Image 1 (cartoon, rainbow, N blue to C red):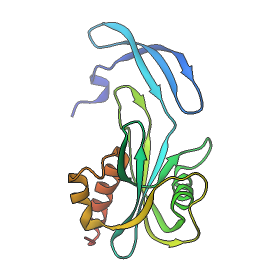
Image 2: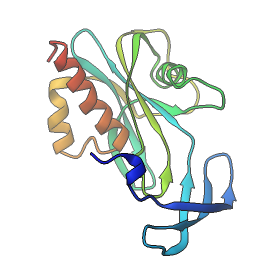
Image 3: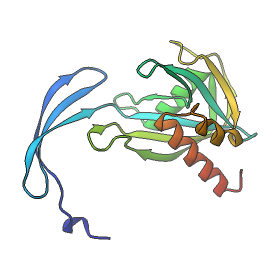
Image 4: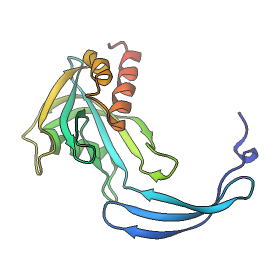
Length: 187
């Protein structure tokens, strides 16, 4: 692989804010691409998200059946939420699991971090693998899901193929968790 110093990169000459609120910041970046062409490019900035794959001793994963109004579509998702200012992403994931499902994880480890739309959206997603969980109460606050269920990991590929699991955080989290768990002798 080439050394990063040898590669040509886009040059950012600045960015001006177009819109800003608690949920989204939209900017217009003044960029120059290799070869010298210079133009403005939209940039969307979103808060980081922490997402949890909670797996129990029976190789089941904790999923939430949710409706996403933007697409008018239902699907199974992992619990998670936005990382608050100054909050550790792992603490966010633990908090969100308990708030959204009523379960508290016994073990937590970082699974993977990624950017879902690296071309123009800054929205880091940090995923955690949580092993074991105990029910400590009922979900709190706003209704996050129509149903909360423990689903056997063996059913996940069929649910993905059938379109019941379709959001990026859930897809990446489940696939990474399966790989990690299979690497440790679990199926």
